[in-house]
Length: 320
Image (cartoon, rainbow, N blue to C red):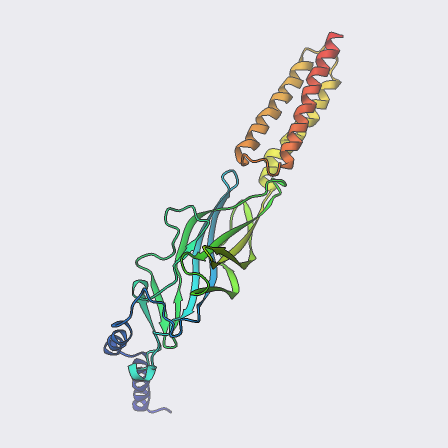
């Protein structure tokens, strides 16, 4: 049986060892002073300026609030994780009570000027004043600014309401060109949280890519995070396609009525007006663009034309 005294001593030893491994407030103050007393946030922390600072990015999607098809706007919530090496923020943990990492305000360290290029917000830059960053003794910095914004998304409505759209988030370092900051992708560039669900779309990650553009004789990298949104068609099929198809059948029924029936023309006119109403409903949801015409618009327009011919034909039958 284990001696209670030995057990108590072992617990105390583990507690003291853990405290020493984490370091105390005094050690952290000394470390903070050693790192930041002569630190300048506007100077890129690289000992050799012939080498750029590699910044690795990963998009963490929290929620897709929706995709406004008419205005071509994606509403997204989450955060982007950036990692890089700060060569001026390194230390020996043994000199500071075993401290291996620390969390510091983002305002006291250098960080790349990251922005969401296709954001519709007034401020496209990432990172709020109260945001923190994690730094370890190897100089590895992890900075994770949140995003809660609307971004432009060019939609393809040709298959609406069975459309599949790929929206992208364009992230770039606004003023630092590739000679200073090189953007890289994490092994898993997009992470979808378990809560990424939407009543209108099935949402999946569709990969990411880095493109380089030249501007003012300099080269800049931009990361394109792609998100695929496939519409759930059940609701629109029941409330739009089914009624329109039934109206098309009703249009044929009007021809079965005898010329003596007073409702013969009125039924055809009612169907014609109904198609006009449905066309207005569809138009309210779709963008005003001629780049690609929705098949459902072509379908309803065709039925509208046939309905018009039906009215004219029924009227001609009555006259004759």
